[in-house]
Image (cartoon, rainbow, N blue to C red; front, top):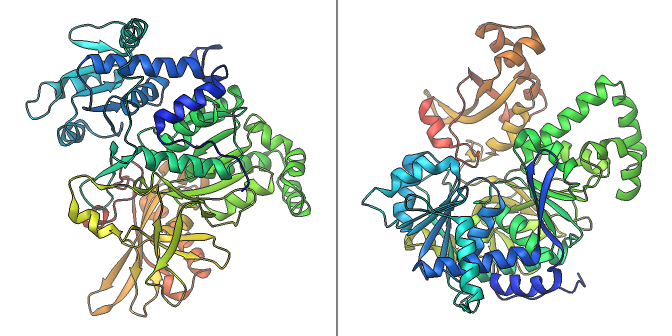
Length: 564
């Protein structure tokens, strides 16, 4: 390690200390229109947070709960920080929830104010007139002025500025208790009603400091924000980390604009989900094939295996240039990254590292780095986190349990659920993992979704779905176990495949469901050939209807089973 890490006790302390260090450096680069940008310095960002917080307190919101909902944008970040650094408790809401679920969360969290973007206007205004919630103030991220009982975030910043200039220091001097709940996060619950994770300042800053001690990203870096900010991963590793190290931050305009935004903002660091890297990889391979360079690149990759990342970067410059030529680090989180993709990026000198964490752990538990790297692993635990596996089977696999200052306070008002996962300070992740002799963690799959066969063998649906999803024309798949009626003990592995009719037609010249089924059945036979016999897929269902998923794109296994 040996890095000198700036010690901070809470997020307010973090903003104050780093504001002094990086005040003049660019903090946000915001696109106003084609070729037009506005830059905010770190000092300006911290001033706006102080002004907005002061205005919120003047509205009577001290120690109250305040929600934030909207796309990734700097107004969202200012709102979050102005609540959490001296006003009250912040409740980031999932922007992809349907209106009825949002309404329920607003009631459950007892928020008294909500920041929202234009897209949520109708929903939020309807919710306001519901007697079951405590909403008093609506704050729009988009309107320039207060109108019809709705505040404008911009105008509140101006109002707060006047108050601060007149000597109001209620927000600026607010004391933070780093040990108490200041952040309420709803989990996306793949199995049950969402729980509320209670996090403290200490949880988040411990994760920030640990992260900074192993990652070589600093104030000269430019970070692109893509993953939803209400997820604690983007919130900690994106927003808070950018502010902590004094980096410049920009916002991605959407999934179709990723490559273009990486180029225009000269991005050096970004985090995406595996599906994004997998699609980048496919596109690169297709382009190389079209240009007749695929074999040449494959040979070159083999030749350069032992070269340093810097040397590879020079050799595979054309591939780096696709992403703007400045990327120093890509992090993959939220699900397992395909080993082939991970290996390819690293072979080309692109530093792609897997990270792993949960909302309950604020979130990062482990992340690969250039020094600590092993394909397929999520690296080693962060410096102040202990990890071990419990109830280990003969293959060395057990449930991953972790301990550290980043572990949540508990599930809010749910003692039962808290007791299930927190035992003697250890958090039970619900993920099955192996830890090798050097301390690298390999995640195998969710404990709840594992299929246990008669012979005691475990099958991880996620691992097999990954293989099926590689078939051209397959959008997604769902692996499940089915008992044969005459043999209670014997479970056969089945798959439900969601296909793309246009791609099937283009790739295999097939049109009818029967023809499509036949092509997919042949592809499954090929997969079965490389599988141990017990893992072979015995039954196939095909459909064009998407699988039922959570807002974080995880398959709801029980709900999908009930449809079959």
